[in-house]
Image (cartoon, rainbow, N blue to C red; front, side, top):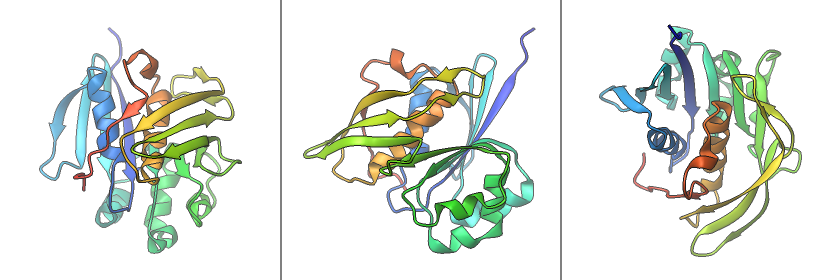
Length: 213
């Protein structure tokens, strides 16, 4: 019998329009992942598809200490934006140190403080910075955002497969430049789990629900 496996993903996002958690949940749903459990706060979700299980945690500021005390080992941590205090918080840093992969927004001024003394995690940086592992090579904001996401180097997935460097055009139904970060983080997470997003019709268009809290 094939062994059941579980992937643990945490999203740390301190910004008014928090979209990454919801976007990732929607992509997983499109790939036939079924929700097995959602807590009353809707910040802990367990999804399943065949022998694959995903524990998805929306880690808001008030939960960081509790998550730290549970000593959860993450496969992937997604970082978009944090307030200044969180960059100095040892509980936040410990969560990052407990992750196999860290997807980090390197446009944030203090992002590298999250990685202090972290010698074991695989770091995937993203943003508008030319030195990022994944960056925006061009973009235009009109009625929607149109741009190109550029994967600058090879990335090894959780299952050991290789994502080759390539450029991906995207469209986002938003005029908010900050929404680009959540979309990049979500795409990267999906690819790390070997989810074949290229097989999804119109997968390069993202619909942002601004009612997400």
